[in-house]
Length: 162
Image (cartoon, rainbow, N blue to C red):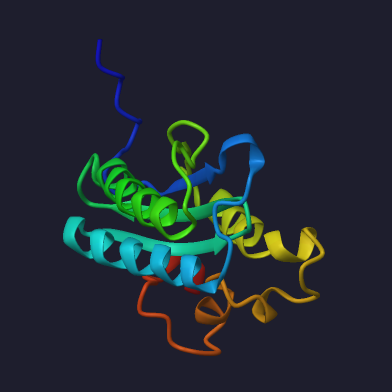
């Protein structure tokens, strides 16, 4: 029996969390992180999925996304997952699953919660004591959202600028 699709509403942002199996590393080095972001960029553009915030931690990733097309997030996460896991396993000479099941997601229905999710995602490295300021962490959207450098992966929301 097929799984039920994730709840995705057109234009309503989603907070996506994808964890490494058994909390093991899903990003070992910067090449892994770059590859994941390249795949995310390519597949998001193909499916018109807008990425508003992201952070890649050692054993999980957080994304804040939205789309005008229901199902776009699931399609992108599926394609990124397949490609990334295959290359990760080949590169690190391992086999088997990398992710702890399917990604988890939560609808972000109001602007106040949207801003809370932005902060939650971009402050993740600070809470994990990996850096003192979010903009010091290279693998998040903080610098792009703060306007410190261009990040072609990002689409800013009107609520963010208000």
